[in-house]
Image (cartoon, rainbow, N blue to C red; front, side, top):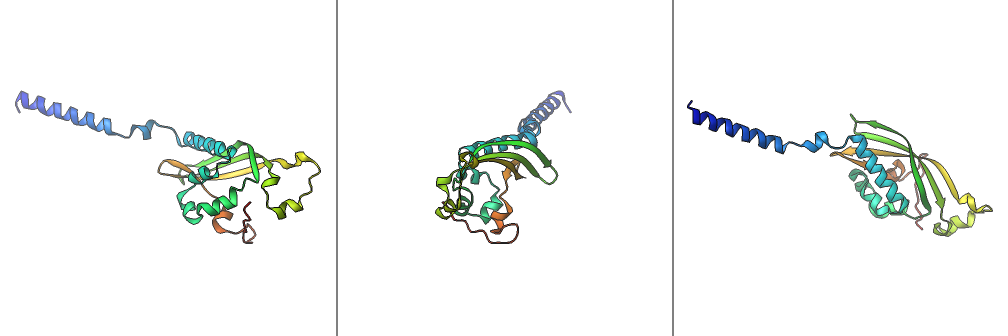
Length: 174
């Protein structure tokens, strides 16, 4: 090979290698970890819960769950506003990267909004202590990783339409 041909070949190889390096998915390698991405999604979920934005929460649920539970049913089950979220604080998390799943345990501080309850439920309440409407308790959320993004899973009860003991769920709305 002559010198000009060799220089031309080396120049083409260098251009090709540079183009390949420029097109590599650097964000996948040097972007956020799955744990950091989950932290961001959990923070988004908490923000939406405090804002009582159930349409936004529905949008961040897993597409498989959305195919089973249409938005109208989801809003009837969750979005009545009967419990106002005051705060959600993460207490623990377990990520199974191989399975692409995570469980985030939180403490939910909520307040019962009596005026948003159905009339039949309001009639059964006898609250002598107004502070009794505010409660804290554990809440656990399941997440699934699809295409590099964490998606919230709906409760088994919402997906099946049945309580843990097999009774049908009848959402009253409100």
